[in-house]
Image (cartoon, rainbow, N blue to C red):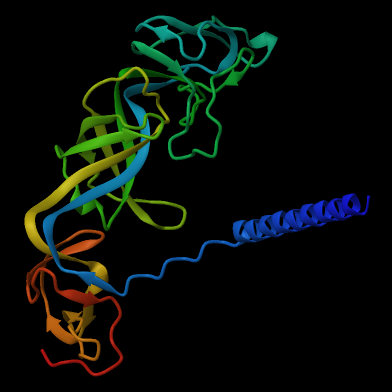
Length: 316
């Protein structure tokens, strides 16, 4: 009987110890899980290597039909019949709407039939350069101002030819000189990852536009080389153009270059722990966003400092 009690108490103690160990392990696990990983220290040196170097132009814009017409009535009046809807394919000369001239019953004139000026697809009208305003198609009963009565008529809709699309972009004056008409580029669309469309720059505006912040931009258009029915006006498109390239050249990351007294230098790390770094004057060539071609001053394998040393350096 006494031995049975002893074994029972031993089992209780063992179970309690196991539960405590498990709880402690879980607490340690949770603590480690909640603790953010320590960031890796930034590299304080870079190496001179040999390889290819390319410089690209990259920017983004929106897809739009190359050919389109914003449709307005010649006369002012009320829309009494709307014969098409968004997405409808129409041919040139198809009836789009009926406009009843006059504002009152006493001013009822001969109804005006609005015809499609081209073959294409019915789209919502979007005022150019004003994307804050909602695009729309005129509704039945709307009163519209005609071309004969105003220099700012009411546009009922847009007819666009979706068989040929282009990318509309606004490029800064710092980048526009990188582009020229006829230049080959590749277009990708956010909505279609993995797909690339060979395209060509078809317009580089010769004159800058100013926005509300007085910033100058140039209108650039890139025409897609082939048509994909999945592409839609308004999609975000990214343009990539190869500007220059060098094959099998000596190159270093830009973080290893320092500009001093109008010249460019690098600091070569000493071979020994206590050795002073050596400052060398560089002769540089093609420069990308991350790397630069080295034409003189360094060799493959040289290890360069990415921060200017505070201590005395070897004379070049």
